[in-house]
Image 1 (cartoon, each protein chain N blue to C red):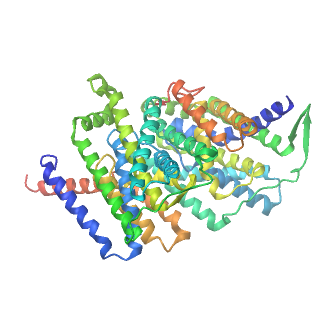
Image 2: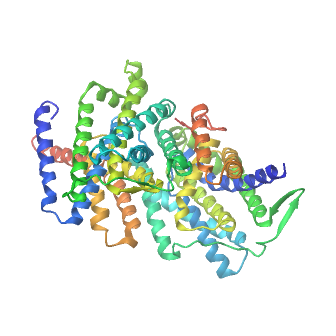
Length: 291
Length: 324
């Protein structure tokens, strides 16, 4: 019983982080209809930036988050405005290939700059843990989970209440109508991308604290984001949260009870099953054409 | 070329004979590169029967390479008493059959999905197959499988497999060509352009999609069986490769999606660039491939064939304007 509870708790913590890592991907998919295959590399950029800043400024890695988010916000805006927009204009497959190409290039640059070795960010409280009844939780993981949940709520509030959020939702629902109402669609696309990149960077910091990372991890994070988004539904933070938690719990339960090498099998079986039964995802929006 | 099939087949076969003679003059390194080029082109054409003609771009075709290779390898292992000349035919039969069964079983649920969702679901199929293969001890995925060396005595194995790939590639190409010009091919094209309308107009879309899927899977599996023999020893990682999954899409996009020659041109170009031009620059490899993709998307979204076509149209337009 304890083991199950502990496994589920670990899964939920992991799932919260999956959710944060996927939410940007989900936003871009929902608003721009672009599959951003360079998402994982942006996540890693966040992790590496946090590593640099926390070492040079000697501060807690979580405190570098605002700085990293601002930088990646700018990078995301320029990336969309000056590169992806042209691919979106040219062909349906173009944006997928383009983002993949960019991911390859950045992957290579990261290997040059940071070496292909595993790195990790170690905060001062790395080895403390707390007990909640019979369940043991690391302080690191808990603080990361809390950071994830706060960020997800912020994004949800941003989309729901702010003028920017309203414009983004309008563009996602009816691009043409939004344009007719005077929305500068390209600017909104770029802003969406910028927000998404900022959140990916924040997720990268959290991931960097919990797990070791190397440039080769980018594909895993892109793929995870995709699975989370398909499970939860496109374009909403709540969907990403549900999908992420589900993925986290399923993969820890599989690793515990079926075998440590099977999480991908159950994950993809679940994914295919869900695509067949409910192609729009658990919390899918009606406006996103998902098949 | 669709009006004069006999002429077309003759030209293809004549070109194949010329290509078949090349190992006589090429240095060994280029025979290897040629091998890889023809193998990739064959895979790309097999992929395009579903991905190009019907518009169902699969991101998991390496599943069939792996399933074909492992099915063939396991059976050949059990039948090790058989004469060596019979090994490849038996392997091809078993590998093809395994892929046919797998694809027919998977086709029904998977083909209900469209676009990106189909692509990613196929990636899922590939990963599930790979992990099961790796983790179930009967299938020997992590242990690895040895293949008997099937090259006849006196033949250089590299040249032998070069010719074998060429024969297989030409067969796959001619099958795809025959499909493209048939009623079935027209049906697949209508599915790509507008599936719902096609269905409404009486095209048996479900049956056509399933048939195209199975044909594409079996041809991929057969090439996988040959590939496994040319490697001599395979593990899960050497056949279920994500870069194969991706490259198959890139070949078509590079050459021209939905065309018959596009995948061939794309495969030849990409293999040549990565194996020959970039062979000395291993540190630079990913970066250059990425840059190539980015430039490709921005400069020639229709691939090489699309680029040529639009260039011709522009020239024709420029030629007709002064005449008015």
